[in-house]
Length: 58
Ligand code: SF4
Figure 1 (tube, protein in one colour):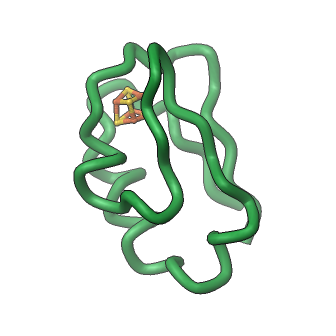
Figure 2: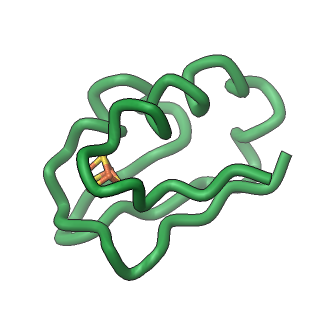
């Protein structure tokens, strides 16, 4: 799985709340790529919860 946060991110913190192993929000969300493989379910949840659709999952 490839996870990116695009420029739409408003730094709301929802993704970190849902999946804190992968997302760190400090102004905008940053992805810890090394944690992606073990956390795919919560990444999908975070992508669905993001209010601006900034999390791109491929
Ligand atoms: S949920 Fe979306 S808008 Fe909010 S911090 Fe995460 S990526 Fe950014």
